[in-house]
Length: 391
Ligand SMILES: Nc1ncnc2c1ncn2[C@@H]1O[C@H](COP(=O)(O)OP(=O)(O)OP(=O)(O)O)[C@@H](O)[C@H]1O
Ligand SMILES: [Mg+2]
Image (cartoon, rainbow, N blue to C red; front, side):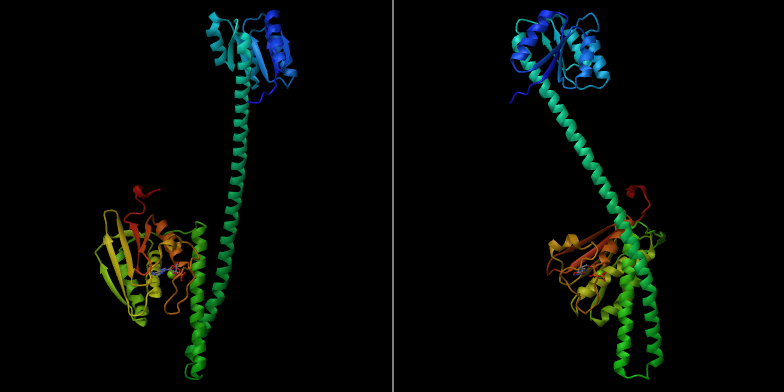
């Protein structure tokens, strides 16, 4: 190890000890100051910031070694202190270490050999401690910076959600007008205009409806993300809700020649937000219908376990490759599979399902593989307010 020279303060009332140590340390390249007692030592030390080590005797008339240590440590001065002791006073030296000394050194015939080692050891320990402290301070600083940028990100995210809310809210009323007006025109002008124009009006009407659905999804994402989604929990039966949604989605299925089979077990009543759960079911059903080939079959299951009720939707569609599955429930993930009947796709449906189900303290799942069809499921706790689910 490279030698680093220190400025050392030697404190002893015995001039003989002082001069041996001074000579020895100076011969080895260190700079040495001396003091006769603790009092003098403290005065010297206070004025000289370069002193990097103190070697001090214990018994001295004016302020002994122990008092010197205590006085220095009281001011939280870090300098390493080595205590000089004689063989039969080791207990005193150990007490000094308890008070903040770094090490002790025996005043015996070997002192010429041991002192240099002790100096090196004490200084190395001190350097490591300082390094440690520097690293800790560094870590703290980086942590603070991280916390600050996290707070900033949170703020920006909130701003984005606010913007999204306002933008989609304002667009929403404009588009509702287009829907209403095109609907009116369609009904009033039905016989009066040529078929081609009727078709165009019909397109305006249906495209604006899709746009409205998209805006509603965007609004939902903004509301959910900003933590403002409030569930309106009421007792109800999932089977009833499921049957109603299946009835409505069957109409769409019929257009694609897709058959919907139901395997619905009886389930007990549970607490849930009816319109949010409808939204989740609709998303699963509309995906199954949207990505399945014509003339295929979809099966819907409802099962009750000890603590939860599970809804699953199984289709014979293209399946989702394993590597795409982790992204499924994230926002704006339009993955490899495309709708089979020209339906719109924004990649928000499953993200909303996941948030809605999580808000109920439930879980979502998918079992699929490329070319295997898919089973999407969600489970709701029978009692989302129960203490077992609080997390
Ligand atoms: N049942 C399914 N079979 C095959 N692929 C699916 C199925 N459901 C979802 N996917 C794939 O996952 C992607 C994300 O689905 P998600 O419901 O979130 O969005 P979307 O259907 O594209 O649009 P949105 O639901 O917002 O109208 C889809 O784009 C599709 O590639
Ligand atoms: Mg979808």
